Amino acid sequence: MSHVFDPAGRILGLLLRCDPTLRHIIALSLTVSLAATVAAAVFGLPLGAGLAVFRFRGRASLILLANALLGLPPVVVGLILYLLLSRSGPLGVLGMLFTPAAMIVAQFILALPIVIALSHRAMESIWRDFGDDLLVSGANRLRAIPHLLSIGRLESLTVVLAGFGRTISEVGAILIVGGNIAGYTRTMTTAIVLETNEGNLTFALALGLVLIALSVAISACAFGLEARLRRPRPQETT
Amino acid sequence: MLVLLPALFATGAVPRNVLATEPETILLASTTSVENSGLLAHILPEFTRATGITVHVVAQGTGQALATAAHGDADLLLVHDPEAEAAFMAAGHGASRQEIAWNDFIIVGPDSDPAHVVGTTDVLGALGAIAAAETPFVSRGDKSGTDALEKRLWKAAGLDPAGTWYRDIGGGMGAALNAAAAMDGYTLSDRGTWLSFGHQSGMRIVLEGDARLLNRYDVILLDPKMHPQAKQAPAQRFAAWLASTEGQAAIGGYMIGGQRLFHPEADPKP
Image (tube, rainbow over all chains, first blue to last red):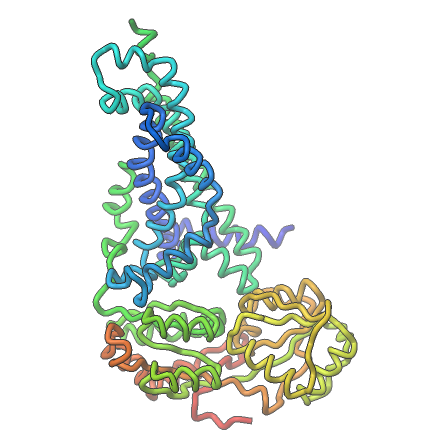
């Protein structure tokens, strides 16, 4: 087991010395996953809340679709996006294949159903408790959505964290659309695949431990944020 | 999280141009062997210092790299499958093809050498011995240059490998070496990837030196009429640099443990 710790020590050394290659890999992982998660939250939270608030034809189908897409296989998303973004594909003129932007789009697609499906579930029960109050106090259903999300901000945070968990750990889609280019589209997860393929198994494992530590750190930040968000709910103040 | 993102950019942790393609950047579709062996990481900084051009490398099997270029998603190629390259050129995708380096393939296997290959030099005989002993043989199965050569060698040996001992893993060279190590099996590897492979324990070279195991690397420039989006000027500079005295010296100067991984094109072949 001791030989596992040598590469871990090496990575610690690289981290402490701010090794530019490792720094870029970590920064790109965070940038891509956070950007995709933020975008998924911006679109997904209102959509999830909307599904809880509005009643319309096809609503049940949309909810079913969002839940079904929770298991969307990343390699399939990567492959479809690859075909769309390739120069010979319909979106080829954008020149986006093998760029970080393509990776963000791929992870956005993967995170969006998670945010919609989970926020719908969370907002549905809050809407049951507060919906009548919100409508009585004069807001129409559309205006009620921001209020609903504000009441359910802790639940929303958990939902967004679930989306982030999906993106930061994902490798199948970004490997295909990013190309794992050194210093440009190489992230923590694609670097782990590469190191494994080069037979540097313990170094790959050490990189994995850094990735897990980062994930924990992000969650800790989020829960620190949660403590500040935790205020009495409207019902309790009145 | 919304706050974190601009903060990352502001601290310079992420280059500002990370979301845009830089003008003097070319995309090289290459084989996994030149990337996994560390050759490109060794020579590219020298090229970038000399010209200011950054080379982004997408490392794929030769089959996939040729497909990537045929779709118009690369600016030039560095590959090693003469037959597939000839088909690529015949289809009109390529403008020029030039050999820039060579090394050789080897057969690696378990130290115990259950098929008794060590000491022989005939690759076809060795494959026959492995098939007869039905010891595990790991095939890349990914249409890479190495995979294509392996298939040709079985054919030349008059064998149609099948059965539980023949394991098609559909992966890169490193994945195949990892699998061979785990299964106590044999596999065909390029010398560069083997020498730089970090998990050799229990494995050794069991056969080398057959003339059929020559491995030549070619750089291919794309046809500007068929692929007008390819960045011709910087791609041509890179191809010319690889063939130049400086480029050839950089390739020949890449060593691991005192062993040369890639020979310059002009080195005499076995």
